[in-house]
Length: 386
Image 1: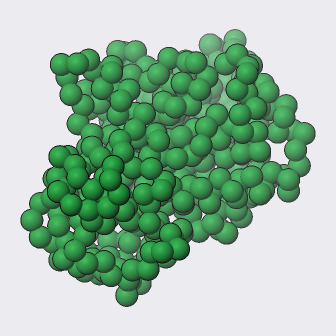
Image 2 (image 1 turned 30 degrees about the vertical axis):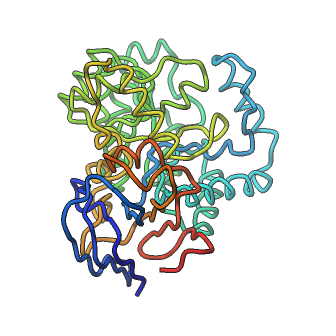
């Protein structure tokens, strides 16, 4: 069985750093963890084992359009995306999606929630690419055409139209859930019932009309992505006990206001972190962690520190409340061996007064030695052989 000796491990749901004399995994599980004293700081280089990361919002369907909207106003980016993708056959999109999936593994990610392009075929293509890469791809579909006009939404009394219902039912056979931001009350109830019967996830896109009411009607598992939120929205999330996903770098790439991270963290809203559209940036969660922590720190102000552990939990343990089951987002004996091994022997990492802060703000892809899902390597540094 693969074994690491004299390393440091982030242990349990609290992600507490501990010296570890022996860390072993096999048959998909962590089989041994001989923990020593806590290791909140490092004085010398070592290997650091952290839970494999969860990217809670990717849109890999536009991987073929990298930087295509870089010179466009934010309001034109979505239209460009739709038009440009329509001109690229799915087989030609496949290598771009596969390449981005490989990069997810290369940068420590074992799992991602992808907000797919409309229809069954894009979901099938992404699923096939994910099987090749070995990642756990959780696919969320959406309707191709909004089922209601603005006036019909305002009235809020119409049920789901037959074409939309048929599209929703067909989509449920290809994906793990769906996302929406524009359904009437009867349509929300129908979508919620269908997804519950089929054990599918529900995501509410934000901003949504009458946010608090939409939360109550759809009862989503997560709100994603939370592109903006005022005090009323944050209070609604707290009352409903809902998890929200933020994608701060994607918002910045479009010149949009950032999500209110400091206020969300301060209110106790469970948060997940995603990288968003591949057209807008790389799916590198360590870059996202660094950006998110500095953004939250800036928003909180110079007299209110933001705990880096709160940021790290956004890509690790916070996923359990949404997916439950074996999706723990932490490491302990008997749990799935979803892990990322970091090389903390380089000059910028080998000595730190606060290990979690270093993980959040200093780690780069070059510091990753291996990414494992259920004990199987998704990516390994050629010189790393546990």
